[in-house]
Length: 256
Image 1 (cartoon, helix red, strand yellow):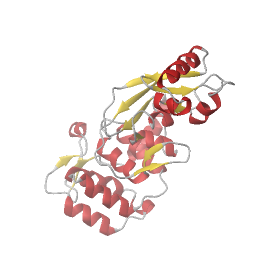
Image 2 (image 1 turned 30 degrees about the vertical axis):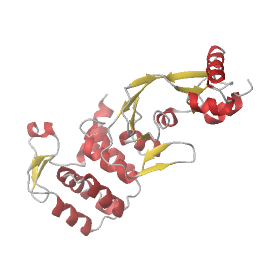
Image 3 (image 1 turned 90 degrees about the vertical axis):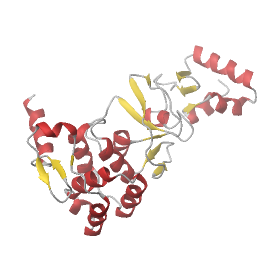
Image 4 (image 1 turned 60 degrees about the horizontal axis):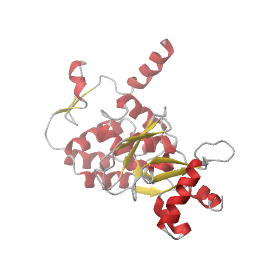
C-alpha cells in the first residue's frame, strides 16, 4: 500500500499519473494490477481508474470528478453542470461531458457518461475540488440551445428558477461566440420571463432582437401540435403560458 495514500489524494487517475509516482511504465502496470486485485482501486474505463475508500469500498471520486478526467480538459456541461452547482430539481443517471476530442459513451457505477460536442470553447471553470465545468452563464445557454435533447423545457425552467444570478456581459459574449440566430430568439424569449430576477437590461434584449433574424420558428418541435401562441417580438410559436409549465409539473407530481 506504499502508493495508496497518493492515489487516494488523486481520487481519479490515469496510468500516466501512476507512472509519475513510480517512475516506470512496467512498474505502473504491475501496481495497477496489484491494487485492482486487492480492491484498492477500480477501473472506470480504459486508462481511467478511481481509488476506493478503505472504509466504505466506494470510489473516492464522484461522478463529476471522474467526468473531468475522461479526456484532457474534459468538463461537465448542460444539466450536469446545473446539478453540480445545486440548481437542478433532479439528478440524472447520466453525466454530460464535453471535450475537444470525442469519447464513446460508457457507464460506471450505474451512471452513464455521455459526450456532448462543444459549441464554443469559452466559459469553463475549474473548482478547488478538481471538477471542471461550464460556468452558470454558459450552462444556461447550452441548456437553452439543447433543451429538447437534454432534460426538456420544464426541467430547464426549474433550473433557471433556482439560479440566483446571471452576468449579462457573459451571456452577450457567449451568444456572440455561438452566432446562432435561433439561440438569440430562444434565449431572449425564455430569459425575458426571468428579466427581473437576473436584472437583465433592455439593452440585452435589444441586442438579441437585432441578432435574431427574420425567420419564424417553433420554440420546440412538438409545440406545433399544442395550440401555441405567437410571440411577435421574438417570432416564435410558444406555450400559452410558459411559467405555468412549472406549476403544472408540480400538480402532476401531486397526482401520482
